[in-house]
Length: 411
Image (cartoon, rainbow, N blue to C red; front, side):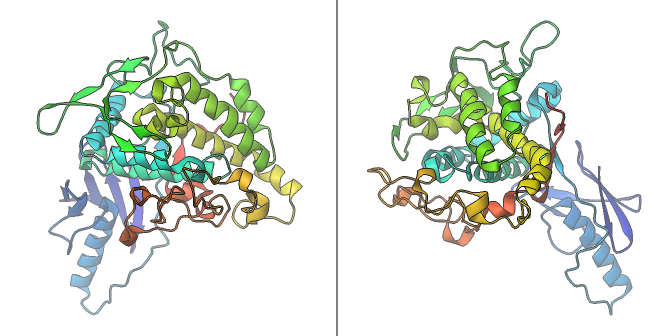
C-alpha cells in the first residue's frame, strides 16, 4: 500500500493484484494501457505515467472544477510520502512471487528487450569493470532493467529484482534447493528454458548472435552453467565480511569486485570455457538471468558497506563529506591512472580514460560508442541520451528502492 498526500487529501494506492486507488477512502475508476503502461480515468484530464500521477490529477481536476479561478501549477507537495521498492532474497519468495518474477523476465525476453542488456554488458568491459565505477554502473544497469520489468504489464508494477545470497546453501528442511529449480530458471549444466508466449505459442530462450567487443557471439539455444552442487553455497561468508570491514572505499572496491563477485561468477560458469571463454564472459554473462540476482546481491553489499562504514570513512577523511561531495580523485581513482580505466588495445583503439570518476558520464546511457568505437556499440539514441554520473547514484534510496536485509551485524 502506497500513501500520498496531495492538496490536503490522502491518497492510497494498492497495486497487489488489482489496482485500487482511493482518495479519502473513496475508490476511483482507473484503467491502464498495457502497451504503454499509462493510466487514465474519466475523473481527470489526460493520461499519466503512474497511478500516483493519476490520483493527483484527479484531485487537481476536481479542484479546478470547484474553483475555476485556481491556476494549477506543477507543484511538488511536501506531504508526499516516498515509496521504496523492496528487493528481497530469492530464497524467501513464495512460489507465486517467484513465478511472477520469472514470467515477467520471460515476457521481457519474448519482446526483445532483454537482449539489449546482454549487449550492453558485452560491450562494457572496463567501462564498468576493473575500477570503482563497477558499483554505480551495475546499480544503474539493474534499476533500468527492474523498471522495464515493472512496465511489462499493469500487474507487474510492483515487481522487484530479488537478490541471490550465495553465501547460503539456500535449501529447505529436506535439503532441496529453493532457487535451483526446473520451474524457475533451471538447474546446472546446460539449461533449456521454455514458456508459453503472449500469442499462446511455446517460446525458447535464445542467446542472440552479435559481434561483441572481443568475440563473435553465435546465436544458440539455452543457458550454459557449470555442473555445480545445487545444495552448496558458492562463497564463504567470511569473504564478504572481510571485505565489509575495509573502511577505505578504494580497498573495499578492489577486494569485493575481485573476490566475492568474481568467485560467484566462476562457480556459476560465466567467464569460463562453458560460456565462450575469457573474455567472452562479458559478452554472454547477462544471458543467464542469475546474473541479475548475483549483481543484485553485490549492490546490496555495497549499500551495506556504505551503511557500515560511513562514519569510519568520515573519521579518516574529516575534510570530505561522504558520499555526496567526495572529490573524484580521492573517492575514485584518478582518471589519469590508466591501470583502472579502459586500456588501449587492438579491440579498443580509442579507449576513454574518463569513466571511473565521481562526475564522469556512465556508458551506454550517455549515447556514445563504447571504447571499441564501433558504430554498433552505440545502443542509446541521441534523443534518449541521459547523463548519469556515479555521484548521482551513490544513495540507492534516491533511485527508489531498498533491501529487506541491510543488517549491520553481519551474517
